Image (cartoon, rainbow, N blue to C red; front, side, top):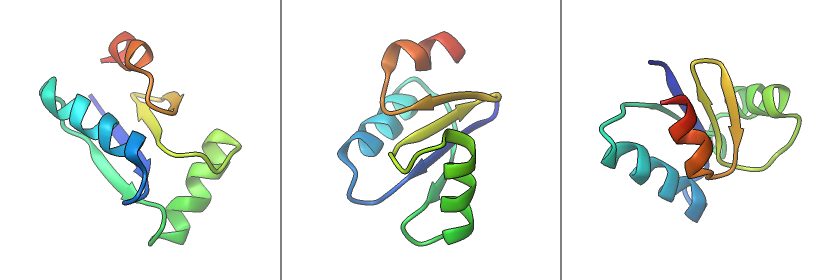
Amino acid sequence: MDIKIYSTPTCPYCQMAKQYLSAKGHAYTEYDVAKDQAKADEMVKLSKQMAVPVIVIDGHLIVGFDKNKIDQYV
């Protein structure tokens, strides 16, 4: 399973999403869009917005911390 999280260090919903995935035993790749402009551009291209977190699970896009959608795809 391929999980990517585009986030910022100050975003509380990003922290909750990462904690939720970790608690369920899922590994993920995190991209800090505050420091990596290329990943920030990639996130905007995928989601069409600047909001974080943006979570991509096996190609399924989730904007924001949504437990139901996360559980649907993991």
